View 1 (cartoon, helix red, strand yellow):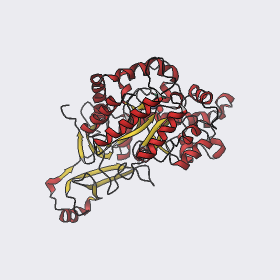
View 2 (tube, helix red, strand yellow):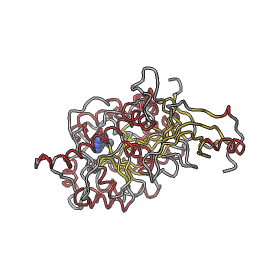
View 3 (tube, helix red, strand yellow):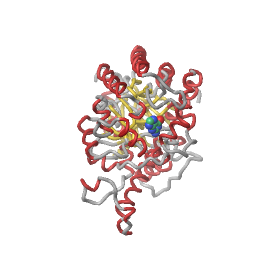
View 4 (cartoon, helix red, strand yellow):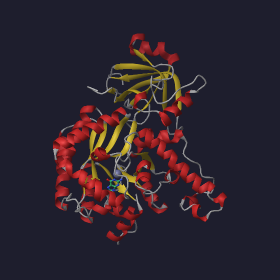
Length: 468
Ligand code: GUN
Ligand code: ZN
């Protein structure tokens, strides 16, 4: 709008996704970011003279990117346990339910201590920002005050975030990590109230029942009500592992399926993101579609805990919103670049099973997925461009913030990463005959934080970090 002033311009190559294309590479473009942190204009640089006149900027106001450098949208981690960062990279020898009892609940108990929480929460916010995560959807722990501390830390570092106080009132006694139903509800109300009083711009509360296995019917229903009253986002886990799905059948015998448990509690809305969904049926995915609920695909976690594989193609066929998540620390890597790589690997594994398995006439590796009931054509693995879209625009859609972020559409807030593929001692090499597509693909497959020179959230530069 005419009332906002131009803050700065960036000139060079921009890479982003749109609804019609998983990856657009726009070379020699110029972008103007206004004082509200929004994208004011985004045009071919041949329009520079015209734009400079209209917006009153001079050559010296333009930040010009190097020849192989590019700007891409910041990545959206749709599912990450901030509290589990302390043990990420360890404790990956058990399957989900045993892993929760042995490692996760005892660790999360430590977050009753504010000092401990502050150290780990600062580390994970700093780490994810350096890795190019501009939006993170966090699970904290059951403790309200230290969960509020995570929100404050994300806000202080300038990260866009959702933060959830975890709710769980059954099957969580092993490590004495527990709350009663009444406590869980009252503390969630206090969490939302105190959170909203702080009036953060880009950090929001999210209602967080851990998963059906550790929540009573009453708790699920009350949380559904709270979400409705406050219009809050909702996150949980669904159909991640076989043992979990079996437990839900036993605990909730009067429900049609896992999805029905959440749906009957009004926990499936267009502001809901459910992690995993490896074992969801076509019928369940149809309910997700109807409600506008999203799935967070966390491939590192699915492999590390031997939970299963999510068939992204099947989710996309059902037109269910989907983004990627690191799921630290079931997933051992906090970088969304890893989530991109694992998502591609997972879909290649499924391709091998579906398309090559049959040619070896091995009944064991024949397709087991329901995908084949709705799809006759050949199965194709995810391309790196599709995985890129999942990590950026897809994530913003999953969190229902794609009106604000996710790509470089005019009017959206400028959440971006400045990538420098050629850094001394960096993780990969660029050669003379590499196309720009090659350079982008190399970064996605081989790059790391050494290549991330700057990170912007709503136009504000948040990396390099303060006192890094
Ligand atoms: N299901 C319930 N809690 C958790 C958790 O902390 N991590 C994962 N990966 N799955 C869960
Ligand atoms: Zn999780």
